[in-house]
Image (tube, rainbow, N blue to C red):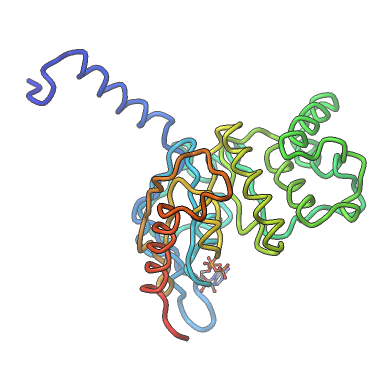
Length: 281
Ligand SMILES: Nc1ncnc2c1ncn2[C@@H]1O[C@H](COP(=O)(O)OP(=O)(O)OP(=O)(O)O)[C@@H](O)[C@H]1O
């Protein structure tokens, strides 16, 4: 006998919500996740006891000082590192299965475009490897270049584009095979602040239009607060999650939202979290 919800309509709604969360709404689920690297100088605990659930359509940023395990966590999701403790699921699968099913696109700090290939050929590369037909490759390349506002630059070579444009091309490459999950490891870290602002705006726009789930590593507090629906604050030795901040900001965010009291309040909380986990060395 259900004493909580006697009303069958409410009960049904609740159970539908529960089942939709259980089936497919969770994109990443880490439970007691740990990873210790064995090095010549002894073990390095890159991640310790990380519990985290990322839901479909979230924009989650990871922020913390160097060595707190941000990159390692993204790499575990992407099956580029294997955890030594705990469990992780990506779309309900092991990272290895998710990787085989092309569950994610990965964007690195450096754009990593091949200089001898045009932008179109660079973006098409993973599609070529996956055996897409030429027509399908072309259609996808044009669609994703349009998404990152690079329509018209297909025939250019990387060196003919600015750093920001190159990074947008690398985002297009990660999006070309339509993965729902985009993992981004400090993609704008090497760019100057004005370019970075512009790319942040464009990334939010892309996220709104595509409904992708995004995991984003950054060292920048304003970037994390501006972009995220949730901010994960991490701390090193051992790498762990020390605070999880739900953003109350609306999804639509003009750049000047950064001057509002709500924004500054979240930024303050992130800063406090970072300070608490920071040692002076
Ligand atoms: N392949 C590896 N072998 C040994 N130690 C590693 C390896 N990869 C990472 N580490 C160590 O694990 C810890 C976490 O590294 P990680 O790169 O995930 O940190 P991070 O938070 O992304 O740092 P940064 O902001 O500098 O990129 C660090 O102490 C690092 O030296």
